[in-house]
Image (cartoon, rainbow over all chains, first blue to last red):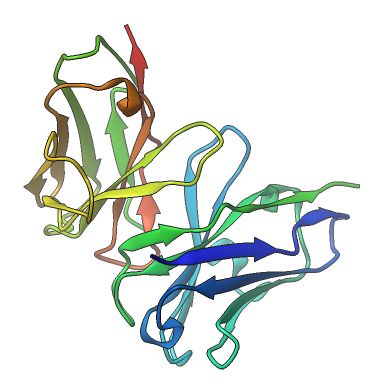
Length: 121
Length: 107
């Protein structure tokens, strides 16, 4: 069983930055890819970014490219999402989630409980 | 990006009845499709991947089928705990994309 616990959400003004973190436990963190998926209030799921198990491969959705950076520290079993130049449309619950493979997969088999990011003046 | 379209948006079903949910991809995704269940206030849960393979611990009443662009999730006999929102997701191409969801509600 994998446990994923997000932190770092909150209220931030447009244009400012926020860093989300996710602590993983219960499995060998360095053997699987990790994703961030978000869900705006009352809306569907929207994939944000993925990082491979070794951190060498990263992909982002177009709307966050150049603003968000996904990273991981396998020595600390943690995942991060650095979010810069935040916009109102980035307001959502952000889920840290685990892929069932190391890389180039996309099946998400474990999800954290989510952390809410609100971008508002 | 591949657009995933789910239908219907809402499905009203009585306990014990069969529920059939549809998902269509804007281009072929082979069998690279997953289904998730999400209850209010909870995180999503993986039900099906590879279009038809049940995830660990998922009851046999959940089944998936399809390939290419047309997919179906079937719940053979709805239980009270199955009332939720179901989303499909393709993983054939980046970016990963989800359908808008089908809400299965009590009739």
